[in-house]
Length: 409
Image 1 (tube, rainbow, N blue to C red):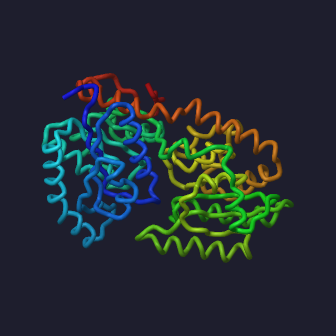
Image 2 (image 1 turned 90 degrees about the horizontal axis):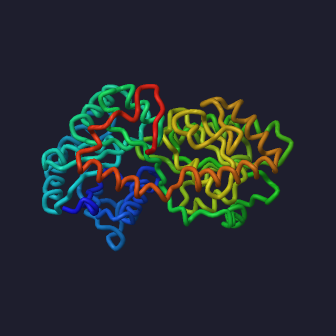
């Protein structure tokens, strides 16, 4: 085994084009390979996996498996546990046959890969992209981390603080490495959004406010819709609101409720749902203001970073990892979560001030490219793998203490 070029098995139980963690996995693999790490991907045998991780681009195995769900539905749990031993021993076989040096699983719910690594006696790293998980799942999943992983990669200080507050004995395993679930080269302030506006019939003098998120309640669509209704009824300028994102299997009722609220509060074309889109660089280039207003602690949302890359101001909930992305008044605007009045006021203020929008957008683009530095992610992970394989990572002083500050170093 070469310490400088380990072979890492990356694992995920779910891949979908609406999942930020799926895009994060894809870009993570690309970046660590550029830093000299050999990769092997094990993902579900699904259309989403084949589209996102084609064999002509990735060293990948498509495996029959089931995704664990935080549910009390006995049928769903039965299906998962029926496949559990099959998936576990398939992973054990792959790790041994492929001579993998380390396993890196993509989300805390992918813990089965940690168990497989334990069986094989190889080191393991986990990504945690959650700020809080309901009980009793929280206790069980954190216990699994304690028993199977040597390092826990988190995308924000918010996530690190949550883990350390729940299990102080995991604090010395935490490593903060910011997530960048996108190809920087696809986003540029020179991209034109004219085609998107033309498609929807939105004139250039109309202030376009965009929310990009799948249609689930925790993403804050109800707050966004109420804020849009208020802004449309009180603002003197021309405005239009667009929601980009589709429904999630198993959450269709939530999507219907979101769409029903919009049709009740907003008449005509003031707010439109356009479904999922693959051309997000064009969508963000077309908008004047981007909004991300979750009502839960979103750890480090990509949909805040993407408009920043094309120089657009973002209004975000002051919760989770969003305050680590947005400096209020400097490169964006923070509002209290689930406060539609505050969100409406922030939207109206920005819509009336073109110069301020431009200033915030330029500062946002500068922050992500120079301070957050997406290009460093691959080498930071490669260094972490080397530290884990040498046995150094789990023996150092804790980076995070409950309530304390973190470090990316």
